[in-house]
Amino acid sequence: MDLPRVCLRELTWTPVETLSDAVQVGDEVTFLVTEIDRERHRPALSRRQASSEPE
Image 1 (cartoon, rainbow, N blue to C red):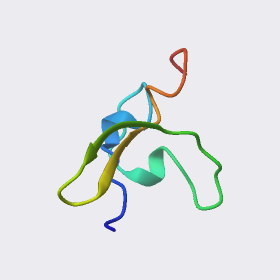
Image 2 (tube, rainbow, N blue to C red):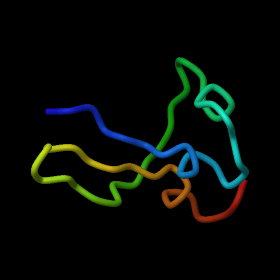
Image 3 (tube, helix red, strand yellow):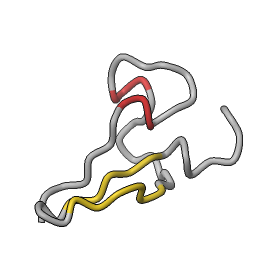
């Protein structure tokens, strides 16, 4: 199984340039599975869609 993929724009409601602008090692985060690539057995995840309101 490939690792899940998360687009940077799906990490936060405000634009970020790098992953470390949105999350840090040790952060606990909740994601919503938005799609599954059945060919690669890889889920697409969204942190933004998992939250009910913009940050």
